[in-house]
Length: 376
Image (cartoon, rainbow, N blue to C red):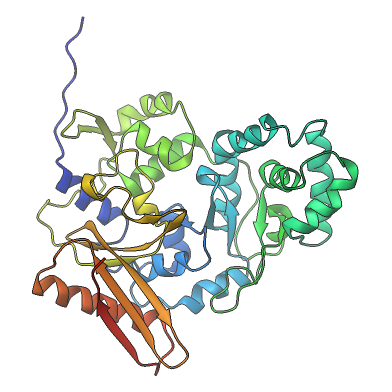
């Protein structure tokens, strides 16, 4: 039996600093918004505001109106992709990454609804054909889709019909949904229809798996096979990493898990300063690894949730350290920081500075604000 291969060990702090660097969180990046969205392989967008706060934490001089304008011009869009959850992607990635993610969590979600019996007797190919015609005629809300499809299968579960359409077709959430300070209800059309006149290239098929592995490592590495599987919702990615092994460096974490990385990717010294950062709920930094301890201390696992509600979070020294809330009143805005543990005077000052920066970027000029520290 051959001895187990050993690789250079990357400690938790080294992994933390490398990931923060890839995630543009060690220093504000000068990238344009489309370039940043593509580098990050999309922004979690289960709610409408997280993509804006995600970029505010990462980009120099970010203004939310600029992302909103890109959504209106159809250069970026909201669509279900990784883990069968809504992400904001460029037009190109909306098509490519949706195709890549389809056989993973998206197909599993559809299979779950089939197994529950809500789609008994439903011809899924026919459903996809009818739904495509409906949403390409004009964008439809999920309620409208249900109402239009139900007469064809009156015994079916109405919600299952609209979920099936979303799983079977690459459906974009059209604007004004997701626009800054405007918004609207979810209405859907296909990527083919929505991007026909967009500012960005959208034609093509699913993303190449090997190329996506390299992109994932560029945004989230060093990482294991299971880490990438947790990010995208696909399984059995080991063969892709093996194909790429000659082009990659191999490390291991302190538990002995094999990690892969790009040879020329940044791996800063573990003592590199990591300024405080205010992140939105569902930020991909917290969701894109099977082992999240590089950012989430083991004793804080689960502290960012209350029931089904995810909280906005902040980092201190690169690690999850608390949650924050924003109360945007007509006369005054209050940003409340709730550390999970006692913070030093220096950390309090640094957090206040970062909160001030966030408020300058994300709230109307001239509206007074307060920054408050609270205990849970």
